[in-house]
Length: 106
Image (cartoon, rainbow, N blue to C red):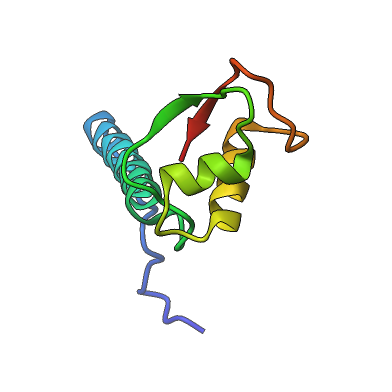
């Protein structure tokens, strides 16, 4: 029980300027979090997935297979991983390729 001479603390009241400062700080913090998220995703979001030097395209020639394209574009990589990356990047439903088709390379 409080002594009779002790008053409850006054509620916090912000002036219009104080409300604007709090709103501005909230926006600044939100933008900072968004920017940090973009940086993390762009720089380190692939978690060790296949990443080849540069991004380009290839036009499928008659007789090309995903396997042959994968070996040509990344001879030092495991062709299975490169084929998987090409299939995923291009949204392919099957491994059959049509001559003249343009494929995005990872």
